[in-house]
Length: 175
Image 1 (cartoon, rainbow, N blue to C red):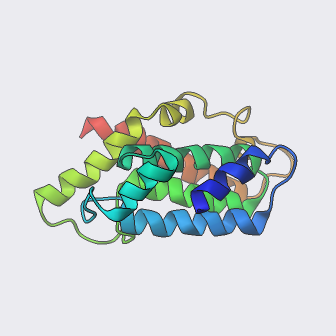
Image 2: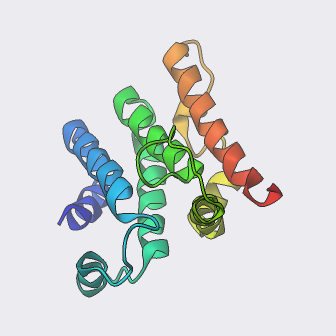
């Protein structure tokens, strides 16, 4: 239901949006990522069957595509709203690290675990929406990247987080 609500609210963002609702959806995405994206989840789980039936999201790659689409939408329409921009960029950053379990400090002890984390990021890099971000990382597309007289430390942190995540995505195939 959250994904259906997201589709509805995103279609109306050009007219108006609700900051609290957007922040709640980002919290949902973060929890969903921690629980349902990754090696611990059986791909035949009830959730993925239901997502396929209701929304046509047949696999993890399609779900990741929804995540990235939401990230791009938020950065486009909410670029001047620091709480949404920061939380959106944190989601992008977490996805670029590849840790689906919500603990970026957790040590990956086996080669299988390490390979799995890189595999998730490789899936991301292949998405057309990620390629869009990698090729169009300007203030024309993402207003928070613009430099103006009103730029502050928060804006600089947002830009740093954005470019750090993009850098990780660019470097994924370099090993």
